[in-house]
Image 1 (cartoon, helix red, strand yellow):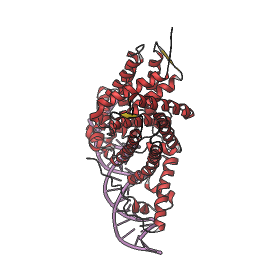
Image 2 (tube, chains in turn cyan, orange, green, yellow):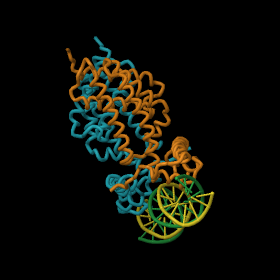
Image 3 (cartoon, chains in turn green, yellow, blue, cyan):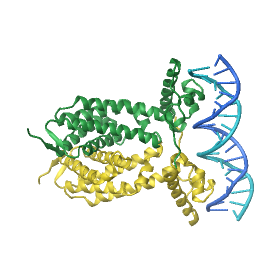
Image 4 (cartoon, chains in turn cyan, blue, yellow, purple):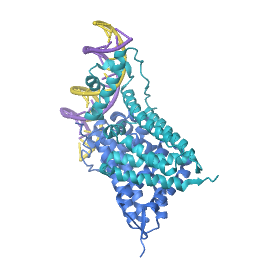
Length: 211
Length: 211
DNA sequence: ACCTGAACACCGTTCAAGT
DNA sequence: ACCTGAACACCGTTCAAGT
């Protein structure tokens, strides 16, 4: 049996100052994570950096992990929102355009603040953490499903598997870029490779529709 | 400044019983990780499960993290070894064969003990952890580079980027399978998708060589 | 040469007391 | 309604003492 980590805030802030406190604590958490690393990220240090007492941290977050989950959720939300937007914008466009737009947008958001993206990768996994990532992945796959379904000139057998494969094929290489397995200077070339990979894959699994 | 984690064994076992002790400790670590989870993985619990004292753990591993790194290294070594073997076996074969063999082999090892693979994903990242993963990734990319270079009928502009993209495009979707974002029952279908994705990508970036 | 386990420092978390 | 910080339990790590 694994220890359970309640992640919902202990209480919702009701006054302006406490809303600020929550934001301050979340920002402090990222700062400590970035400057000190996970090993030195203690609730005491976060509190000190935020300029509040440990007790205040525990007033809004039931435990340390909830703090990390909150930071992760915030970051992941921004990424998925961007992906969903492009997917909406590209509805009905040709497959080539869809592929390129998706790749560009995803690399764009992920690499916008590389250090924060990297810090998120370094968070220790646990059931709640996995749930957040899984939920975001599911939303991404769904958005891509809708996008592909909107293609006027093609249909896809096993749409959701194609969408999932596409998402995975994007996430994997971009993670390599993030972690340095592909040098960051080569971001532009990787973008080109991924655009090609996505477009050729989509064209290969697309079943032409003639009306 | 992030805390440093020396990861080399405190001492090399010189007698038979101590070699056994090290193995026992590593196995116990995996067992605790699998049955109790990372949150309950304490050096005391590992020692108890291994049937030794805490002191013995620290005789061979400078700290808790080194223990996790050792377990990770062992697992990752098995995976990369398999990949390198297929890459060697497929030298000179047609691109279609290469792509299929690589996909099958990678999915095969990764999904051989899914729970252990999952547990490895859940380890907290730190510089040494990242270094192990980066080193394994680099070996994978290199093996694929060599494989692609051996193709008699095609050359690749920017070989290493193509190899890295290919590896990433494999790792991403298989991670989804591992984490449940793609249902495990669909492993066979995903394999087919990835074979197609890899082969079409390779064919699209290959520059035919006629002699 | 290897093992033991009490001892110490530090971290997560709580809660009685304050404003 | 929110904040403080001393207090407590637990974990990582050490090291003097054993075999």
